[in-house]
Structure formats: structure tokens, C-alpha cells
View 1 (cartoon, rainbow, N blue to C red):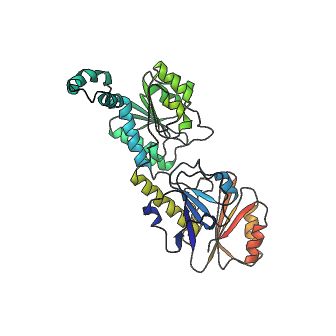
View 2 (cartoon, one colour):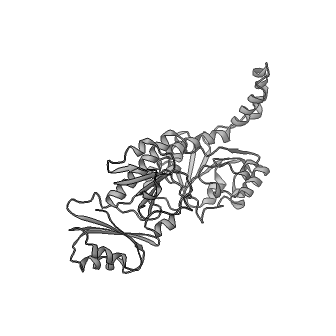
View 3 (cartoon, rainbow, N blue to C red):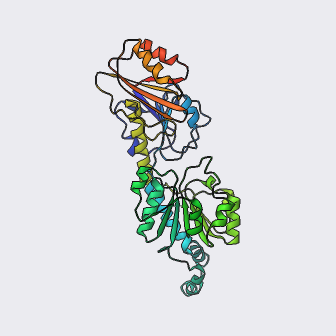
Length: 388
């Protein structure tokens, strides 16, 4: 029996996908797998039974992914499962940034007791007049699942879309409309676009990338949207750009104190992926990833180990998963341990991701305890798991 512990409320659409050999448990210390959304995990000590963590969402800042890698714990996320929800709120933000919708709503509330509000509104609405997004230039920084969907939707709305992503994948390229312009220099996005939206992960190379230099290049009156990560934007630089009028509006999904004091900022309480559909999709994807890994050793959408797929465990054979340092001679030592035990290897896959490597083997017979013991004694091997 495999035990799954939920650190947050996880959609029933996801947990209902668990096979009969799985059981939800409230006991953290007996968990085979963990499902999580936003719960902080950095200070947690993980039980030896824990094989994997499934993050029902894309961001994994709440999970100690490097420590998990060292302990042979696979961390999954669910890229693209909430893409439509974020796309829709970005489209909403485009309209909030182009029309005086928020100020208009506030004016109506402030004048709710005026018996002549309808007449007064006809005079007041000039202050909230905006512009249409039709024909305007939208720059999309980051063309992953969300960025590609935003770009395609904006094209359908009649916008002229420019996309920037130095690491664009083949899959993303196929998802993108041919009408989008591919930009190789991010500065061209800042110089040319009336609206800019960012969809990249928070990492050393991206934190603070929207700085004073980027803001200085933007067209006068540009609108900047951030529904990705709050740390991507230098708040001091954005505040100065808003105050000077260089940036007309900054619309973000991250209500942090520095942003709340900005004149011209429209702030939402992290609503991007907060739809029932997105939560269901993320939960279902996370559960499928966990089950495929626990049952078959396959890895898909892991943030700390490489993708690896050898299909369903074959009948009458044994499958062994080995987590190890990505250093020379590891595969040779692994195969030697089985060879010396007289065990034939029917199939083998070795993959690496940075310092972390993963080897999955199908054996013609049950894995001998002696061979498994030898593997665990090899320097650089972190974890050995007999999947079947």
C-alpha cells in the first residue's frame, strides 16, 4: 500500500484518480508521496518512506528541491495545467490597463448616494476614457505554456504580438501562432511595445530583470503586466517609472507592501491560477505524475531530476531506480553490480539534469539483495529503489 499525504486541500478530482493500492493518510511520517500547493516545506524533515512530492501548480519556491534531490526525492510540478486561467486574467489585465475601469468603478461607489449619478457620470466619464487594444503592440517575455496562450489570444483580439524567449522549446514553437513576431533582443520588446507581459520563472538570471534600464527603454505610456513572480520586477525602478509617467500602469498579481504604495499600480491578490478548473487540472496532473513514478519509476515534469520514461513495468521482470551524482563511471559501476550477481539487464535508461542523474533498469529476474546492497555502497549513489 502506498500512502499519500496532502499538505493543502487538493481537489477531489485529483485524489479520486489514486488507484486502489493507494490510500490518503493524515500521518506525514508514513507518506510515500506528498501533494502540496503553497505549504512551506523548507523546514520539514522528510521520512525515509517519502519517494516524491507533487506540487499542484507551477512554482516550487516552497519546496527544498536541492535537498530533495540529494535525498532521492523526486519533485514534480504541473506546468500548463493552470495556463488557461492565467491567460484569461492577463487578458483582463490588458483591458484594466487600457481603460479607466478601476477608477470608474471607484467613482461610482464614491457617488452611489447621488440621486443624479447618471447625469454626473456623463460628465465624469471623460476622466476615465482609455484606448482600445486592437492594433496595439503586445510584448510577451517568456513563451512557455502561459506565454504562448497569451500571445495566441492577443492575436485573436487583433493585437500585434512580439515574443521573446531565448530558450523557447520545440513544443512552445508549435503552440505559437505564426502571426507572432519572434524577437531575439529583449530590448526591442521594451522599445516597441505598448503593452508588455512577463511569463518566466524566478531564478538568478531573471530576478530583478525589469530594472531601471528596462523601464527607461519602454515607450512613454507603456503598460506592464506581471502575473508571473513578484521578484522579477525591481519595485523601486517601477515606482519611479510610474511617478514620471514613463509607465502608465503596472498591473500585478502580487500584493506586496512596496507595490501597494505605487501610484498607478493595479494590484490583485494572486488570483492568476485561482479558478476551480485550474485547481482541478493541477491536482489531476500531479496525481498522475506521482502514480506513474511510484508504480513505474517514470519521471515527467520533475524540477530536480531528468525526464525518463520506460513505460509500464514489464510482467515477470524487475525494475530498479538508481539516483546518483552526475559523474563519470556511474553507469559502469551500476551494471557491474548486477553483472557480478549473475543478473541480466534487459533494458536501461540513464538521464542527467545538472548535478543529478537517474538510471532506470529492467532486470530479467528479481533484483538480488546482494546486488542492491552493493549499489547502495557505491560512492555517489544517493538512493536505490526497487520499483517492482
